[in-house]
Image 1 (cartoon, rainbow, N blue to C red):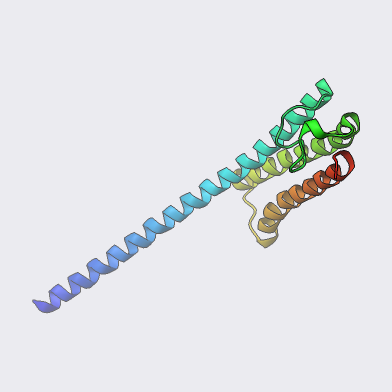
Image 2: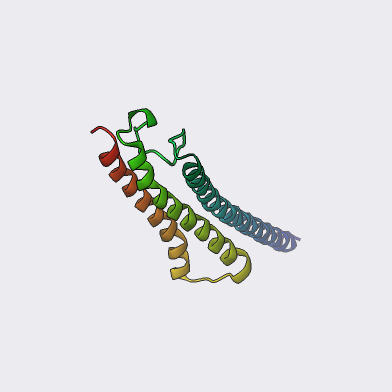
Length: 150
C-alpha cells in the first residue's frame, strides 16, 4: 500500500505543478496582452493630445495651459516671444502627434492583425516611440533657450 500512496502522491504533485505552470502561463499571457493594450492606448492618447494641442494652437494662435506645449519649468507668462514660439512649435508638435498616432496604429495592427514577430519588430516597437519622445524633448529644450529667459 505504501507504493500506491507514493505513486498517488507523486502523481498529485505532478498534476498540481503542471496546473500551476499553466495558470502562471495564462496569467503571464494576460499580463503581456494587457501591457500591449496599455502601450497602444498610450501612444494613441499622446498622439491625440498632441494633435489636439496643435489644432487648438492653430485655431486660437494664443498660448494656453497645456502639458505638451511648454518646456519644463517654463510657463506661458514668462515667454519672451509668443508668436515666434507658436511658429516654432506648431509644425513640430503636429509632426510628433502624427508620429505617435502612427506608431500606435502600427503597434495595434501588429498586435491584433499581422502579428509579426522577431527581434527587429520588438526593437522597432520600443525604439521608434521612445526616439520620437527624445526628439520632442530636444525640441522643447531648444524652445526654452530661444523663447524663455535663461
